[in-house]
Image (cartoon, rainbow, N blue to C red; front, side, top):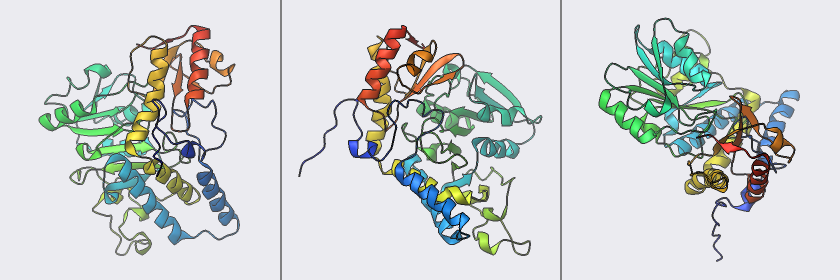
Length: 357
């Protein structure tokens, strides 16, 4: 049997890229991911069923379970330890509300607002922001919780997850990791952190409105402050007051699923979870590092690249990029290849842009 052997920078089988339509030149997954055809088909089927008054609610519950299982596989958790939410800020807000009065929270300067604002908006808490590169050294006794994005939205910088996990364990610090800009391409063991949360509409390529959170079983301090009917072990048996109780597991944090989106979300997450971990971990960051080295800069191990300059140079070359914090941001994902890379390199060189230090 012929064995497929990837070339450097081409860790994803072309058959996977063929599952996506019209992705050529799209380097803006850090804003939102593009759906595979199967995901679009599932979304159309759900909206058609809604229009025909034929939504299959038990099947939707099974699709929620599919999402839990796929996300668990990506972040190294058990499906039973995965909660369903709508947004990252909702999950982080639940964490903030679960902290005791006077708790001290450590965050990274310039991190994404959804990771920081729920804590700053709570007058009971004290929030301290430090530069990302000093975050781990600032994790000392006296800090109650650290909240940080595994990968920075603005420029793609990575936090040292291993060092962070060790520092948290040594000092007894609770942890919240936002994996929105890193899953599935950055390896993470969610069992080493209290909460690992990711909005699924970016690199997980699901519709917007689906967020998953892996909650460590011993993080019982995270309270179901937004508990509803879907927060029970038997949601359909807990619709009314008599006998209703929240789950003792992660689904105590569940919110009611967005019915029309769930099947498409399950399809997207299963596609991402099915890619061999070593391949998805190598492909996007590999392309991004080739882009960096082509400009004479050191590899960074991140799928996101930040450049000083105007995005017009890329847009005129038919590339979709973003502008964040006054810089150009590119993101390389599983549906990008060497053709996208070459066009991005040509555009950057033509405009004489440089990568952020």
